[in-house]
Image 1 (tube, one colour):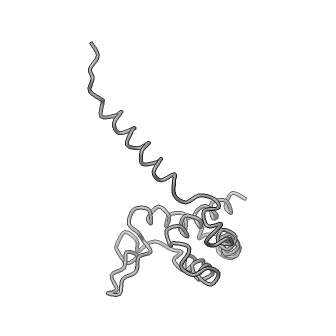
Image 2 (cartoon, rainbow, N blue to C red):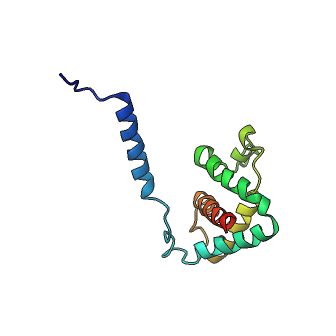
Image 3 (cartoon, helix red, strand yellow):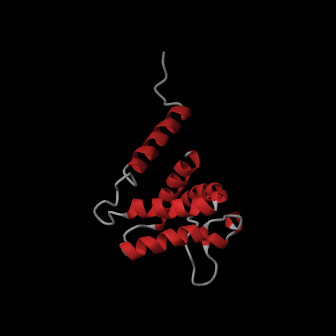
Length: 132
């Protein structure tokens, strides 16, 4: 006689699928086509310039994306206790690249592109740049 209880493994797999389905509705290619049509091209151009002179930043920029997913690395604080100043994030490099991309995007379309999306697009573009 089969048990009607779900195994913990099956429940875990269902939760993972739920999380990925929820995340799937977020950032995608062309996401900013209405609010900032040049956003992806701007990020790509800045990353092309950066990778020409500092290809060693490819790994740190990709690593920043993973840190940002878990601890919101780019949040600043008026008290000087920003997320990027917390011990796990002190070894991260590439903040200046993210700032450079953010500045270029803010010039084109102020307030349209979030820092989290910038980090994600940078991670994508740096991965592609390293492959080529």
